[in-house]
Image (tube, rainbow, N blue to C red; front, side):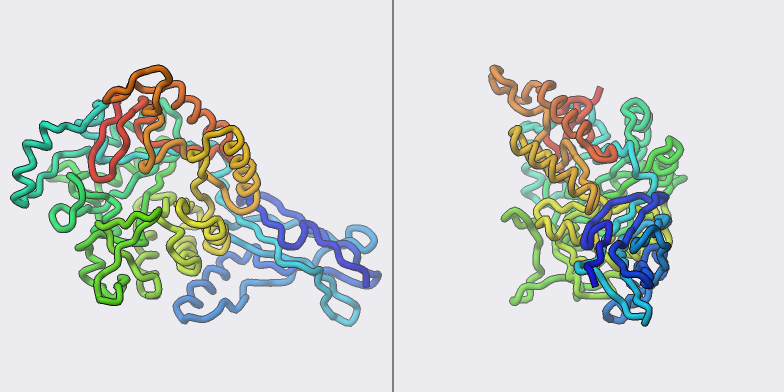
Length: 480
């Protein structure tokens, strides 16, 4: 029998959106043959149930979500089928021929893969990344580092006192939503972690890092106005309500690779954490840097997965539409597969943004596939020459069409401010004069080359802030 020809070709990968149509054709079948498409498209609920059940029982996926759909004749030896993409998720498909005796004949090669994203992510996905702590009294400052203040506080630090200055509140950020969502036209508000941070025990820096979270679903009391009538959850709900009332979406930074020392998980389930051979708890790290204020979770524990998945669901029930998954590449694919399946059982439109910086492209590709994520950080912000920018954009466009959308953040909390880039011919100063030309160039590059309008920037970019964000502090944004 002549070779069967499948289109799209076996092994091809595609990104599509819920509501799209997708067509398959199989050519080269002899007379008397029929054709079918074997796929789990349209069986998202069954697939999620199977994933959850298999991981709880430590069983391989049985493939119960797959089915055969008859294809229709579309000319001599040619068969076709168009399938509506009605569900969000990662699906596979492959067509085959059936001879008159009922025997199956398959074209060589792997399955076709489709990552189906929520329809609302098709376009205009401008992301404003807000660090709520920075929306307090330091908001309008261009420079907050004060040697005089540090000298005054040094004796208290030496005596072991915890001196934590006041920072911004969630309501301070809520009051700026007309600027962020209205004037700037951003469509997604991305919050850095808002969980409680260390205050005395193993606190690093003046404020402590929000990535050293103490509880997965609690809200840091430092972000709440005390008014005797509302709780922290009430004030978070105020923010979520105003975001949605403006027609925007809310994304939350969630950390599940580690916690801070003294966290509720560390106290309640020390067996869920990685230990060294000598019994010490392990701190995670990246780029040859160890994050000493953190303690690493051990992802081999299935009950931990359920605890984490329930935390994601709790935030969804509070109005969160998507998640930035900090250090997500350090979490195994099968763990993310379980978490995303659990979340989509109740909130199928949820978006997962992978922070894969520091991990391999192979890890990113796997997490955007079987891991169930849709978006990942692009690395355009780390490319500067014409050759490297052009090469990376080729990678962005190709990968975003096949694997998952790469989001261009022009600036993140881990990088120097764009406006702090040295101005040619200007003597260095502290604080440096804002380099508006460089900041505008890089922001325009990221925005205009974004796929589906997935472009993000850190709070203060719009004001040409020059002081780098520090997660252990509360830097200024030169606001206004």
